[in-house]
Image 1: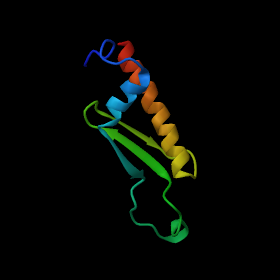
Image 2: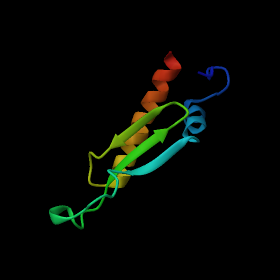
Image 3: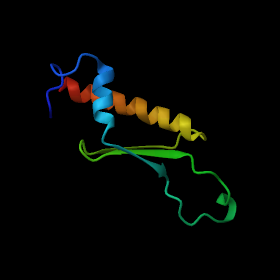
Length: 85
């Protein structure tokens, strides 16, 4: 893990640095929608960072924007824990 304590001045700079490798996907994937689930919007979000090796999948709310904001909050908490190590 790269030593980020001397490289960046603020935590926002750290978050922006690690957000470069984030991939945003729909969650769950759009597969075999039929019956009562036909026409239901997919509102879950999955964030993947291959460089750090983690995935965050959130489908707590019925709004994709709120799920994305929650996933970013968890991402920032994850980065905070990495820096502490």
